[in-house]
Image (cartoon, rainbow over all chains, first blue to last red; front, side):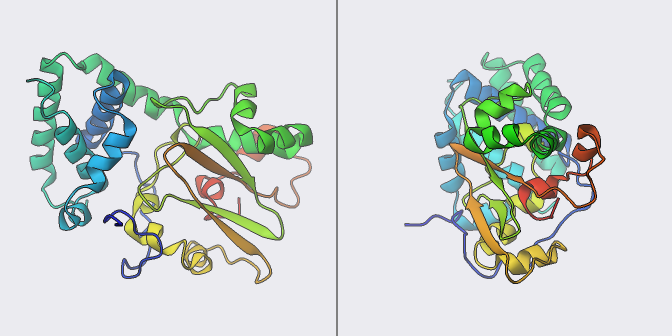
Length: 85
Length: 196
């Protein structure tokens, strides 16, 4: 069954909005989430497929309401939940 | 930002996660700073533009690039191996008959090493859903109106493979050297939402 992220060809998402002169990150925390994920992947805490899966398993309403790096945050939190146990 | 949480609330959540992972010995402040610094300093559309300019001035390089892009990148001291897993890299060339455009319908796969961090619109549900269904309309919204006779190929990227578009060299650029040619190339040209 297709998950919520499988949007190719769907209708209803409206026009494509382009942000002029968009910075790489909109807040420091976005950069930190990016770095945390790269560090965990490098360390082998999880792999890229597990990372994507953790995002794609988000409940659809939560997935659609979350910003891009909020989805990343959700995945890193979920996949490392037992890392310090 | 379009998120469901206020940014400060999220920042606190991130700080907590960071402290937990550093406390568990899984990373360090230095490592995190280094990852961000290298991304911002090294990953830029200027890399992709250099590859394009070389292909425009050197037909033999162009052939090697289209045949084995990973190897052709190494000739210029570039690499796709910035991430934890090796990525197959393919360059697709625009012609008068065919225009190429990239998307990742499932998430956000993108050649960050060559194009820099991806823009939000590339990761948006709107772009991902529509460009495979009505590419001509989407490109037109980006200001790219292609001739009726030009076919559009949409490349849906996957986790193991990345693409980049090789735009056509603009007319009237015969006298330009490689650096000045590279300066003509935009990030959108390398994604396919602009001509160059």
